[in-house]
Image 1 (tube, rainbow, N blue to C red):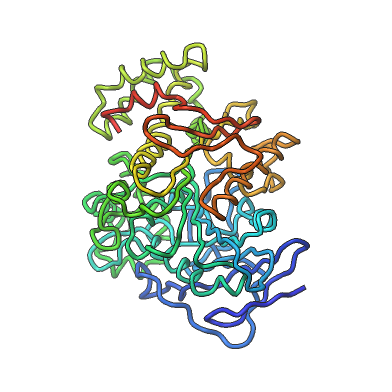
Image 2: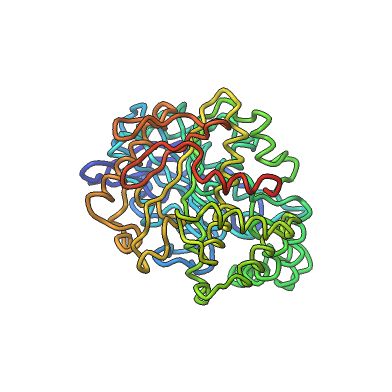
Length: 497
């Protein structure tokens, strides 16, 4: 059965499900085609009559996903669409949750099966919005003559759409939580520091993605130089006219050349001095979001997911481990710290976890990419009046005979309630314990979106984070509140990251 809602651009017709309604493929900006490639988004054109909103819009152009089960639907540069999941488009005043997908700023979309948000909306009586934004060079190119951070500006345009329209879908525009994972978590923390996003959201949940992964103007300029060379283009205007398949291919070759040069993804937000005036961590420390409550967390074994792309990783010995740790510490001019860091992890894990070379390297790499940046974000935000909550997800994947541990992205089907999505039973597990954990996570995120406090009867009391106790909620078969978990490893990073 069709249901309708009136937006500022025109009427949309969605679909009535048994316990919720969904509206898919709603344009929130003009298609960024032709001269609008590499430009900030412009307002969507209005339409007459009733627009069909039963199907997702195209995803942003991207290379194939390196992860199983994460394929996207149709792709097009005409990709600026969002989706609304609501208990009812009845002009209620429900909390609003806006999801920003991950994928390394080069893959993903708001329409992936993992992010089907109907169950979350129905369970919590909340409105959930998922969105697309431009990826790779299309979203994060930085050079003279181009608008900086247009992928971030796409997200801001979507949040402006939410402000102006979500009331027609039963949502409260004065109670908006942004949340995202991996690059989506990094995008969330970047939005915390962007003046144009101020006031468009009131709470934030960056999952497995914090504030460290941004470019300086110098490193972003280096990326553009290599990209233009790979594309065979003299300047931005030639790049603007290049066929999209050639641009994506040149983007991938560019990544192979420069990704080891700096501690950031090749295409990522850039501190340009205007749209992003300062590094997000600095802005947060200085109180840019002193009134925005945060939940910040990571998964214990993040890096194990990426090891799937390294078939020989299981053969890692001490010599290779030391070489690779020196390599990642070189990014911070601290490669001489490798022996001390390795020994600190080996000592901390004795009697608790494996001390095999690959296991130590994965733990170091997980912390380098995710957990330590998350802690730095919490440390920056905790002194301000708004609340800060920390979590660590430790449920282990059954895939590959347990080799993935509590890896990157594993919390997503639990948090969205999509354990029944394709392949998720093999990745996340199934059964009563999995369902109970999913319900506890959904209820925590819902409670936080409603009031800024994630506590509910299914959890032990979740205390706020401070640099003394470092209270952290452990999500596993039986949740527990831990004081400073894995603290020996955290201390080992002091002075490095």
